[in-house]
Length: 89
Image (cartoon, rainbow, N blue to C red; front, side):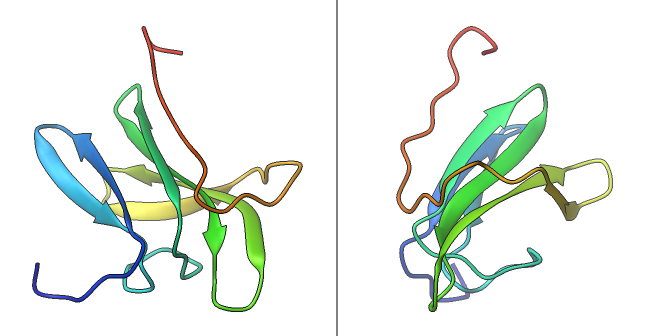
């Protein structure tokens, strides 16, 4: 990697490995300890810590436009969440 990262998440989307979070990214909010999941061709960044507070925010990455967008928050803040996708769920 060309940029140092700390407590990042990783995900594979369209045969590419993505380093997500770790305070250096293009999301609307910097986050370390982020959970990452890929479902239906989209990558999700879930929770984390922004250096001040734990997060309940969720963002989605659409490779078609290369942009992270905020979506509905979780009910509770989560840092270092375990995220898994099994059989499309």
